[in-house]
Image 1 (cartoon, rainbow, N blue to C red):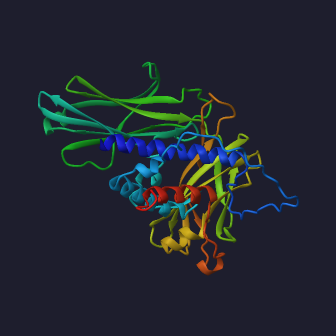
Image 2 (image 1 turned 180 degrees about the vertical axis):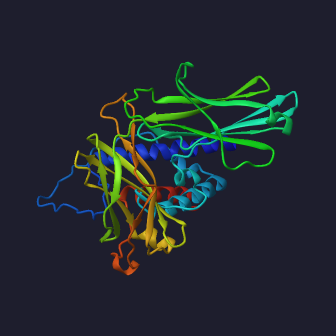
Image 3 (image 1 turned 180 degrees about the horizontal axis):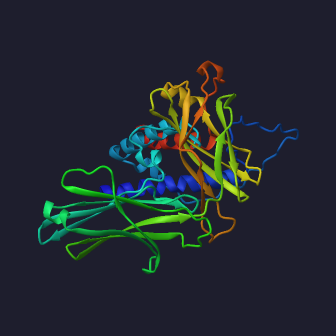
Length: 370
């Protein structure tokens, strides 16, 4: 029963989103702006229709909610109100939001092995989940095994293979300078080559031969030709209630881009905000900015200075069915100037559609009206 109720809640929230989207299309605004009521110069005369016998009006589902269901809606409304304080393009960021903090992280692939000498494990890790053609492909491998097994390692190689198993290139892996106890660590890389016309979905196959017995692990990665390079960040400035951070790109394939990045406190190194910006980029590479709303800076008590990092640069499809392509940042992070919080306009973020949804959720959770 509880699962059915949760499903109904999800369906209701989705329906609300559709309803308000239709209303916005009919004339609602999504911007931070006041609503102007048009002045009516001509009186409107409304003729009341003849009273007809009608069936009783259906009872609103909200009036049929029990106390537990209303309590659930009150909890949803509280969470929704907390999120409604901030614009979707500028939200607080915490240290536990690992995925946002590491958008291009590669998770090592670990395969347990049962060898004649005992248990072992072969792990393979790439530098990033998405690798770009203008950067070397770096691979690390580690074999954890009994001492006699480690002594019998003959050769460690890496192959770049397609999903069908076709080998595109290969290179030897060398012992790394650091060797932990009970393991052998290897590293290797393939030089950058922007002329490669490889598929976008590939795997690296690391093969280890131990006492003549072959072992191997496959690790997937995405291979991209960068659509744009983020070369730098312009001087930040305050504009009303927002900190504005200009972005400068080079080698741009013209099109519509979306950029996500994380604003960190430069002194403490802690996350402050996750920012999203979008717009048209041409060959000049200027015109795209990120904004951080002062409500986030106040909530995080972070006047700056900052560092901008964790970039995800997407070249959005020109038409349905075409893939989203990626760009990259030349540097891992860039410094961003901070300003006293008193320099910003004291104007809270407010979205009319979000506020309307919040009022509806609160009505559903009300013990009096439902």
